[in-house]
Image (cartoon, rainbow, N blue to C red; front, side):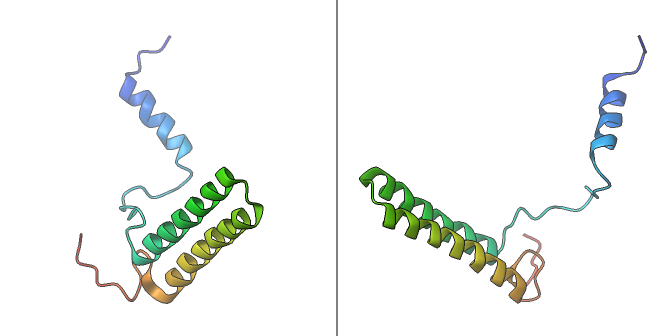
Length: 95
C-alpha cells in the first residue's frame, strides 16, 4: 500500500487520460451564431419527428430527419463562413 495522497493519485490519473489536449484554454461551449442556428434547427427537426412518431406518419418522420440534417449542414456552413467560435465575422467582446 502506498502513502500517496488522493490529490496526487487523481492528478496522475488525469495526466494519463488527457491525451495531450491543452486544457488551459476555455472551450467556448459553442456560444456562436453557427452553434445556435444548428441547435435550433435540429430541435425543430426533432419536434417534427416526435409529432410524426405519435401520429404514426412515416413521411413526416423522414422529413423531420431531413430538417435535422439540414440544421447540421447549416451550422457547418456558418462555421466555415466565420460565424463559429473564434470566427472572423464575430467581434470578440470577452463575454
